[in-house]
Length: 112
Length: 115
Image 1 (cartoon, rainbow over the protein chains, first blue to last red):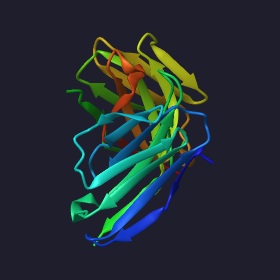
Image 2: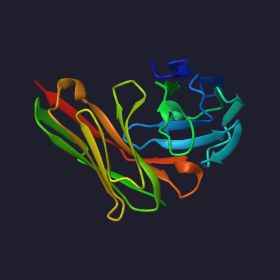
Image 3: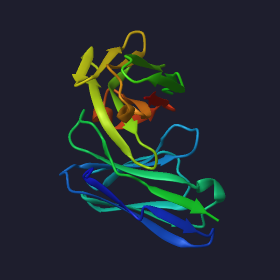
Image 4: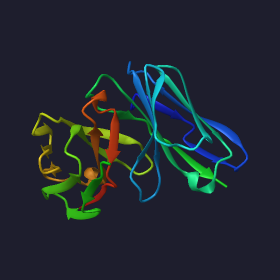
């Protein structure tokens, strides 16, 4: 039990579909993150939310749309994705400054 | 722009051996440095977090050191076991503000401990 839960664990979608990834944490953390992990590449930070406010968008294409309705939940809405978007999408959360980030097990996304 | 490099990319050792994983970073203005392990098909598990003012952290058989001035960190694993087999990732918490909110990751060292 990592404290950070991501659903679904696996997702296969066509390029014209719309789907959403969900992340939930019950650690009382105030910051939440989306990362992308592609084969043979370092994890890439996508978005950061602090106290529900987006504080970082790492030049992510608009076909990825994050949503943070409260400090415990984070979504990543997907539409019109490309084959190169196939990757493991990881969510993380963190308490105060200088604290470690805690990760979920990720959603393995495959774009057909 | 911060860049993080991990050497070696892969390592295979016999059980019981002590080993060192290396991490280097280009910008020494860091907030902290974190070591993670990642098992196949899983997320990241935090192992050790070293604040920029610290030189090392220890947890069980693991010891991580930090030399900010030279841009290096090492993860020492004592008496390795097959259960230690995983990919080990180094991540640097960037910026002197924001509490190290942004992590820059290396590509990892894939460790295999053989019986």
